[in-house]
Length: 240
Image (tube, rainbow, N blue to C red; front, side, top):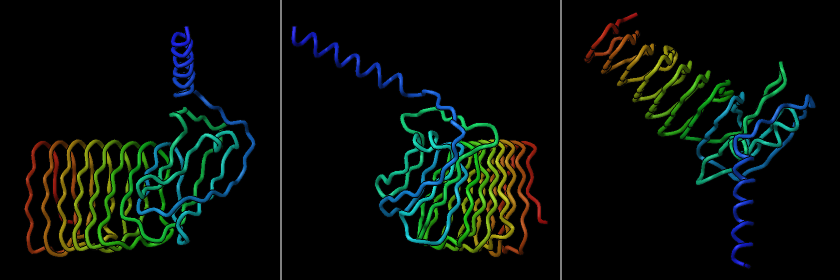
């Protein structure tokens, strides 16, 4: 009998947990600003519709603005050196009309960015690091200034990415209908791989390697000594 009772209790707990996952949470209209503190981090992973702003400051200091019950259901924790921002238990958060979630993240040096969903991701400081690895899916709008040795970007979906700064090497792998505007990013060597209908703009000084399938377009500025293009479909590579 004891085993049966234990089993029933376990089933009930699992059912409750499952019911909470994916639950809708509608904004209550009460907008608040809260401060949070986390451990330090080397990367940021955010999934959701949040607008995120990176500022210069002591890592681990976050400011969130939004409806109180929405913020209560957003997790901000560091896992294996990465700041993870996401909804609790995969809940579907629905802000009131005209409202949103705005998160300010203090950063010193980060080298990894993982983004999915929608919303803006804007850097208010130059991100300086040796290697920068960025992966984006969904419909994000990203605006960053980066000073690095090597920048690698993988995009899918319909994100718009604006980049400025400097890098010795740049690698972009883009699928879907993403747009990367990087005329303001001065690079020595660029490797670009496009599929779908993605468009990329870059400034290259020494070497450009392009592989385009589908209807993607690459436009470049600069006078690279080495240019290699491989195109299939209706895509194009042209100097601007």
